[in-house]
Image (cartoon, rainbow, N blue to C red; front, top):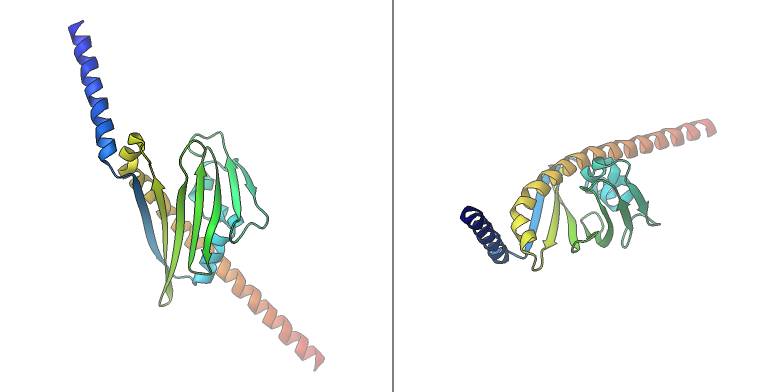
Length: 200
C-alpha cells in the first residue's frame, strides 16, 4: 500500500511540476519557415489569395481528401473564407478567413479551430532579384493553458516541417500556373498575328 501511495505522490508532483513549468513558458509563439522561389511574386500570390487553389499545394488537404470544404463567394481577396469538417481527428473542424491583403506582397489569415483559441497565419512575399523569398508563418496564442504552453516547442517542429512541405508545393503550383499563363499569352499572340495576316 505504501508503494502505491508513493507512486501516486510522485505522479502528483510531476503533474504539478508540469503545470508550473507550463505557466512559466511563453503564452504565445511565432512559427515561420521561408523558401526562395524562382517564380514571380504575382504567380505565388495568386495561389495563396485564391482559396480554391489551396488544394494544389497545401499539406492540410492531403490529410483528408474527403473532408467537407465550403468556400465563400467570391473565394479570393479580403474577407474570403472557407470552412472544413472532417472525421479525421488531425483535421477536425474549423474556418479560415483572409483578413488582410497587400497585392503580391502579404496575406494574413484568421484560423478558427473548433474548441481552440483562434490563431493568425501569414505569407510574406519579398522579391529578391529573379527569385521571391516566401515566408509562411503562424502567430499562436496559448492564453493561460499550461498544456498548450508546454506544447509550444513541439509545435514549432511539427508545424515547421508542414510549412516547409507546403512552401515546396506552393512553388511547384506557382510555376505550373506561370507556365500556363505564358502559354496562353503566346497562343493569344499567335492567334492575333494569324488574324492580321489573314486580313492582309
